[in-house]
Image (cartoon, rainbow, N blue to C red; front, top):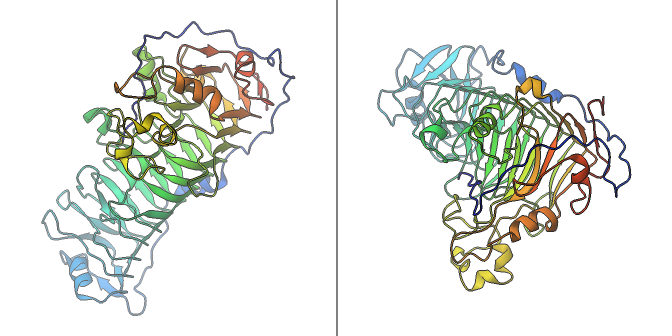
Length: 510
């Protein structure tokens, strides 16, 4: 699941930072300022009230609803068991509990609805692992606080078994171990407070069957990964606000994703067809967004600010020259053969302000199907159904030579505004990078991708382009490998010719 990014065959050093270039490349026409994107996403601003002022649930039971009594231990689970599918349950105000067995949980039936009155809380008392589980479809949970459950690592508390068609709205899912919420196909996650959970606010992972048609809208996702799992299991790639795994079709919009320990939003391994728009992503310890070994996405009109300070500073302090981006596209790209709403990764009309570095496009030359360097072990690309085919001799020739690796290709980065004030970050170097690069391929011994071929491909041959952006501040640009650090004129000049129509200056774009 995690990212393997800094395996270098040869020692590399980052040269001294070059002076800022504020003019166009010698062989390019002078740039005019690009249009300035909107200042802040209104839908995400609305999500800022979700945890502080949650919408109140119904004060009385509707006609035909089953009333659940907080004074009776296990009343919710028992009444669910004894009621038919499609029943509506109204939880009275107060602290509801389950029987004190580790696996005691509510097992909904198809079409059940669970509505919390103002002040209704389902509390696991640090005893029960799961709140709601089972495979029943089309379950609704609204206006209910779920807290104090102790799901194991990589498991979740609400919709533990990733059943399909659930609707979770106006709920507060907080202070649990593991993930607060799991996801199934066609799940709707709207206007919830996902706060202070031990691993993820939500883990969008389904062990069997496709996970398609996910909506994550208007939620506040804050303070998750309290268990600090990257420290406990270094390189696990298993933390953050939300993790998406093999999701085909997701709309992630209007959320406030902030102050999570680790990454804000992380799409990891064979995700496809994502629309990430109108979110406010700020103050996360790691990257705002990682899109890893995945395909076809639009990232637009987001405000991304003050992310990656903790992780970026940690790597810089130990002398790591890797340009650790706040938006990090890792072995991911547009692929016309994988059906989606777009055949590119398009990152446009976003505002990125005072993050630790900007956008990094990366491809690990040693990471491909059947390589031990593939941290998504046992998984192959969406273009090769049988991973065993990605071996000698076939992998050395077309089409497997191309199809057995995830490629950072067909990425367009345009009409964004990148603002950096180093005095805000209190940094002197390595926080100012925009990058497109790969490592020198060395591993495994039978790899057909050795040497600089992947560095050359991602930099010059895979149709990755920046254009019509506004830069404010002392930006640097890394190409090919970490040792090539360019100023703006070099970045725009031959052979790279990036950022046509863009501008760089302390005041450009207002």
